[in-house]
Amino acid sequence: MGLDWPAIKLSQIFALVPDFCRPLYEWGSFLVKPTSTQQKLQLARYPFEQSDFGPDDWSQGAKVDKVKQLVQYWRDEYDWEKQEKFLNATFNHYLVKLQVPGYGPLVLHFTHAKSSSANATPLLFSHGWPGSFVEASKVVTQLSNPKNPTDPSFHVVAPSIPGFGFSPAPTKSGVGPEVTARAFTILMTDILGNKWFVTQGDDFGSFITRSIAIQFPDVVRAQHLNMFPVPPPTLFSAPLAYLRWCLSKVLYSDFEHEALRVRRNFEIDQSGYLEQQKTRPQTLGFALGDSPVGLLGWFVEKFHDWGHVDEAFDPELVITLVVMHWIQGATPALRFYREAFGARREAEKTFETYVSCPTGVSMYTKEQLHCPQDWAQQAANIKYWKEYGVRGHFSSLECPEVFIQDMRTFFASDSVKRSIRNVAGGL
Image 1 (cartoon, rainbow, N blue to C red):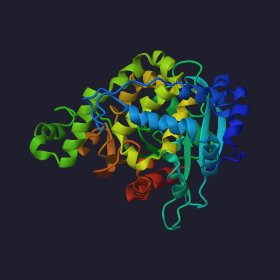
Image 2 (image 1 turned 180 degrees about the vertical axis):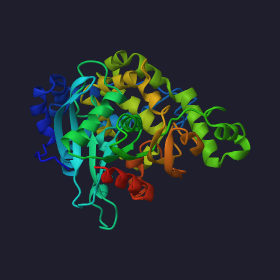
Image 3 (image 1 turned 90 degrees about the horizontal axis):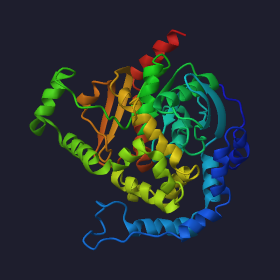
């Protein structure tokens, strides 16, 4: 790993970033000087619940009582300085300015946990929405320097997607999964000095991870995903998978039935946010970028619908995840949907292209975009497939021990070792 810069503290970012991008510095004042945020929380106006919707019925969206509880916590108890100390202790933070082919300059915030093992594997951890690099906070230490020295170890690089967290928002359009994939690859190779690496992606991270493997097949030796939104098979593309789908009532497992039920429910009842964010993100940004309560409610609904968050996330973690988008006013991350799902169809194309590197997939029951394994085999060289009857979209935070074990098992498998040996032998 070629990085020899000193790490910086998060508080230093706001002093350094004007040299890169003024807007992030200005938005960062919400953390450095939180008075305006506190005032907005204090002046919140809430909707009322209709009497025929019970406390566990989220079909109209985020529950008012739940949001009120979190607003009270954010306003009266949440301590950003404490969280900053935690994030500084957990991660080494860096800023880098890259020249990205086909786009131009981009500034990235990234974290880098270098393993003490000489045999550690370079791993790129790509987050999603409504997430951030914070998604790696419960797994980075054990992945980079495991307690058991015989466990596989990784040099873990967790960047922030441009416009998310501490990566400044792009000043012009065009930054979607493809450009981000190029930026992350430049980071891993030109900046950090890796000749090859492996990848992990969830949500947008899955599209970015796939795009890296498509654009740079020689450097990506294996990929692991916990979201695999491949389209259904056709009679011509995958006849056996298609026939099995036609006979799914008798041939599919209970997990596969539930996976497709969750997927259909998402498409019918939970995807309104997607249509708005991929078409008119800036209009939505006037609301979510100006109202911390609005942004919190927008996220809380997703946390509830997409995972077992109430069991796994304390209020402090929930607010920190929201703050990572509040920093820049929410709009930059919303725009990523337009770039990904707009006219260029960057996101969809990544799962319409076959990726030949060894691929591992971990499926959780509340993940919204599941598919059966024989669907996934249309798009990837599946070497590891694991199904879990609990947890969901935020697996690295919901069940970090399970997540870590899947990383270790897949990336230490014979198929991945062969892939690494093949590229190493050719260098």
